[in-house]
Image (cartoon, rainbow, N blue to C red; front, side, top):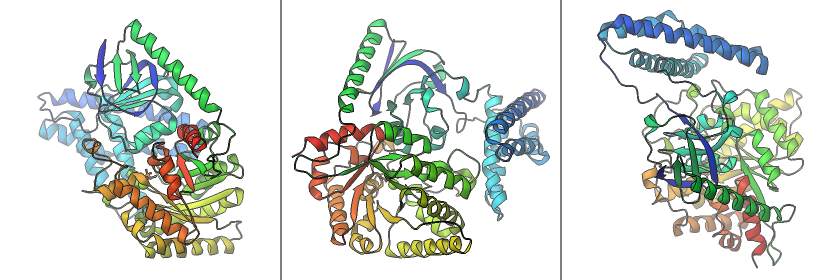
Length: 539
Ligand code: PEP
Ligand code: MG
């Protein structure tokens, strides 16, 4: 038995085999090779294997998602065989006597940069494709298999770190727990784990190289401990903990179907956060009264190109229909910082959290924004929709957004396409928005406070940096006063105000929030019943 101590970012106990995701990206070493012919043979073999994988993926996609969507795998095959790309790799191996992995990786980066700097949108989007095929080729060279979710047993995913785009591509039914060597408690991967109701540990000091798939393990999400090869006694204890968790779940189930109202009769709208259409199942299962934050950017991640209007319209309509007439707040694209989509060619930034992200991208690239707004305005006919704009810092931004929404409505009108302009609100997640909350409240229908970013920007602490986790304190008096100020700003103009950041689920603060006058709390689906029980117990 081996025991490793990390930090829990979502509680719960898991028992099962480990599935190690070893990523070659970032770990590729430059190695001097004498026998370049042997290196070229390895490259050829890996290329053949990659072509076969892409052909299989094409066939699978053709059956599942149709020809148009499958074509990307055909494009990847063509790019892989591209003469310039192959010549560049060969030249590097032969002229510099380097290993194939290194030559592929550097060539991939060079080509990706070249595409990213092109003027043409289509060519810019190919940057992600070159990276993708280069990563696949490197994986095959190093004998590393791509995770095959279809044939994977439910297991404990162990990885160095995971990006949100990697996490969204996983089959949630096959994940018993996440164990990360790095990772931060406030990252979107941690948020996704909470959303999926999956125990998760970060900062677990384990050597991935020496860990093999299939080894039995336990994740103790209560105390943040990871056991490898546990003995019978530990397995029995973990089973007992799982049973207790089930009992606790049963107790909370008594709160299903009840209103979220304090003993003195104060009603709070208790909603849930989602990232994908399939998450609606968790919302319904946990009896949330609506969706207070649909992070629409997850529709844009883990893929090679922007989702078009039809795809988005279908997703939004489906969520609205599944929620019947309950409130659904969809946040417009909040991409950037840790949520990266290579095809957007946003480039590297020194301070991505303070960078080109969210509404800044939408206002600078109105084509992307308008496509999403068209899909949203059309979907509004199918339920109780509200649109919410992220990362607002000024009145001018809201004025510009409203102008674009009016243009989109006019376009739909002229095209005779049914639409509706729904309720519109903004996220309050910057100190600037808090300070301007009174002025902003005049322009919008509601506020939703994003405490994850509000804490980051108020305390000047990068939420992605796990070294700062112990300084990242959303209970900081400055953050709590910002929340209070926002509530006052909203109520002065008769607008409702909620919290959709992770702090909304902190039951040690529920009473304080309600006393401040918060009207709505939107939390991970798995937290809904716990928060409701707290509200119902309050005087
Ligand atoms: C927040 O910042 O609190 C928020 C809800 O948005 P996200 O976590 O997606 O940045
Ligand atoms: Mg945010």
